[in-house]
Length: 440
Ligand SMILES: Cc1cc2nc3c(=O)[nH]c(=O)nc-3n(C[C@H](O)[C@H](O)[C@H](O)COP(=O)(O)OP(=O)(O)OC[C@H]3O[C@@H](n4cnc5c(N)ncnc54)[C@H](O)[C@@H]3O)c2cc1C
Image (tube, rainbow, N blue to C red; front, side):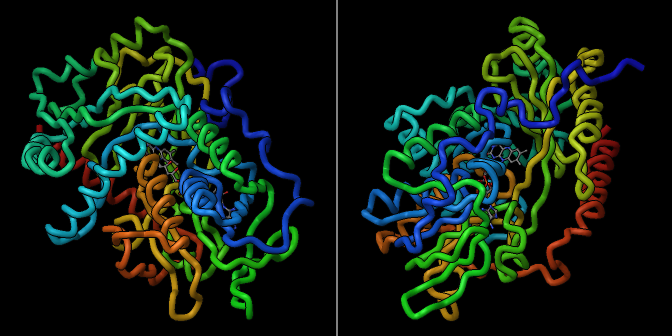
C-alpha cells in the first residue's frame, strides 16, 4: 500500500509553518520580577486576553508560560469561530440558564470580531459561515427544532439544508443534510495568537515563555507563586491553563480533564480541487458525539480535518492514519491523497459540561481566578472568558457572567491520568455508529 504520508510529513501543527514556535517574543528568564500586581498562568488566548484587560486597567501583569509562548491549543486548533452554537451542547441545563449562556456566547462573537478589527490583527479572518452536517435523520430533526432559538437569541443566521441540497456545500453524501450558520467564520489560529501576543506586549504585559508556574500559596502580602525560576508575589493570580493544567494545582487538576483532539492537513490539492470539495468554502462540523470538523486551509489549497483519534498514548503519525481513513469516508475521491501534517492538542472538559470563569476558592485562597473548559469550542469563548477573568481580577466586572457562580465540580475517580477516556470514546463511537446503522 502506498504511504499516506507525503515526503517531509511533519508531526506538528500545519499552522506552525507560518508562525514557528521558537519561543520568540518573550522576555529572558532573568528579567522575571519578584512581584507583580497579577500573575497570569498560561499564554493561550485566555491568558493573553486576561493580561491585556488587566494591563489596560492599569495593573502590572506578568504572564508565565511553561512552554514556548502559545504552546497549547491556541496555536493548534481548527480555527473555526462562531457565536456559541456549541456552548453547553452536552450539558444538562435549565432553559433559562442555557439561553443566558447562548446570549453571552453570541455577545462574545461580536466582541471578538471588534477586537481583531480594532487591533488590526491579521488572522486571515473570514466570515464564511458554517455547515453542521446531520449524521442521521433524527439529528437533522433536532437541529431544525433549535433553529428558532439560535436565530432569536444568538442571531445565528441559521437555516436548514435538506439532504438533497447537501452537495451545494460539500462534495459528499455522508450527511443527511444539516444546518447552515451565517454568523460564523474562520481564522488562522496561530496568526491570531501572534497578533494577540503583540497587543499584550504593546499593552505593557511582561511575557515569559519557558517558565513553569508551581504551587500557589497565601502570604501576608497576598499570594506567592512558585516557579521553575524563582518564586514571585502577586495580589491576584489567573489560571488560564485549560487542557494543559496538569498538576499545577491539585484542586484544579481534579476538576479539569484534558481531552486530546487530532488534526491532519493534506498536501496541496490546488484551489480548484478544494473549491470542488467545499463549493461555499464554509467551515464544516457535524452532529456526532465524536464529531469531525474540517475546512479548507486559509489559502484554500488543502483540506484540514480533525476529530478524536487517540486518548492516552499520543502519536501524531498514528492519529493521522486514523483520521485519514475518516477523511476518505467523507470524501472517497481523496483516497489517494497524502498528508503533509498531523498533530494533536488538548481541550478541557469540566464536570458540568460548560465553561467556567470565576474565583476558584474565595474562602480558602482568595485572589485566585480561573477561565477554563471550552470543550473544544474556545477560540472565541476562551478569549472572552480570559477578558472576563481580567475584569473580575481588576474589580471592574459590571455585571455577572452566565459562566460564573456555578460550582466547579471534581471528577471523583480522576487524579491526573484520564484512564477512562478510551472507554468513553469507544462508547460514544459505538452510539454514533449504531444510530447511523439504525437510520438506514
Ligand atoms: C486540535 C484542536 C482543535 C480545536 N479546534 C477548535 C476550533 O476549530 N474552534 C474553536 O473554537 N476551538 C477549537 N479548539 C479549542 C481551542 O483551541 C481552545 O479552547 C483554546 O485555544 C483554549 O485557549 P486557552 O488559552 O484557554 O488554553 P491554551 O491555548 O491551551 O493555553 C494553555 C497554556 O497554559 C500553559 N500552561 C499549563 N500549565 C502551566 C504552568 N504550570 N505554568 C505555565 N504555563 C502553563 C500551557 O503550556 C498552554 O500553553 C481546538 C482545540 C484543539 C486542541
